[in-house]
Image 1: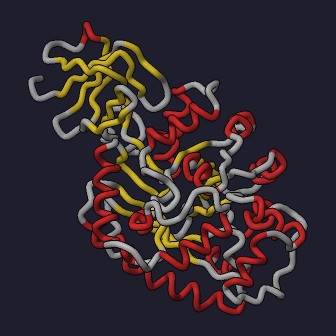
Image 2: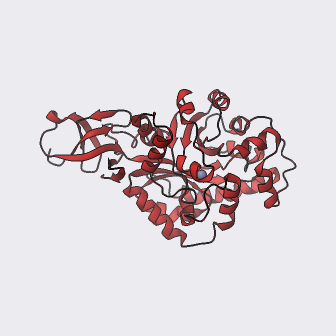
Image 3: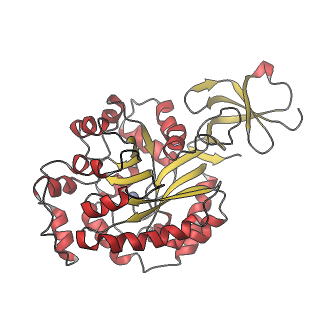
Length: 382
Ligand SMILES: [Zn+2]
């Protein structure tokens, strides 16, 4: 028994429930053995001051934008934010150094797994040797239907590089960027790809997305004009973007819908009747940064949505800290119990990335990482 790690804390969140006064017993490599009452745990118990939780799962990040920290001012709204990212992403400081520092900080602060959006192979070398689990979502975009095959081909070439490192610590799929940047033709090509069921998409991050689909008005028209794009072939659907685009996904997909800042109850009811399995990822600090608004999380809860959490990128956030996201939710909605939010940040995230056999909860045999939260700081212990 002497090789066991035994951690006692006033509060241990096990992935679903907050337990009090228990002892978490781990093997030396961090594999969970048991959660015991203190009197049954024997000797050699380490007392932790604070709360223990399984490692956090960040279901939406763009590590490759880490060098853009502080480049874009707050409150621009999404269309101008995107325009600035596209124009400035190739400038600035050493991207590899920025990504490496950001990933190291995520580990220190308790993240164990990341759903990471990639437009290029920039993060490939880092991921080959990282202690983080990554699901790389290679993102494709192109709003002009005629360009769809070529855009897909370019993104498949990026995917191929990530597929080469698929294994226990990495998986990958190819996904659409957003309803305003992916044509129906490109959506259809994506849906036809085999072995590509884990999907994600930026959803309703701005009201301009609704205007585009409802009646082809709003700020995205200026965005397209700025980049000289002719969207005369796009016909508005008269419905919100989610209702317009979710049916384009393959029926067997599992889709992480990211942001959901302007999602309505009608959108949710519609989405829940579709065949795809859905997860609803919230990124409150990024939404405050760009649009100064947080998703209606009580609505997501009331309608039974399975919620996960993400940090988005350092272009739209001051840090990639899941505990800071939890704090932002508690600030916006003080009535939501902490154990609900913690489940979104752990077990639900692990299910969304299809890694809950190993991550997300203190169940026997899992190796989910152990995080100590004390004095409003999260720190990885194991
Ligand atoms: Zn994003």
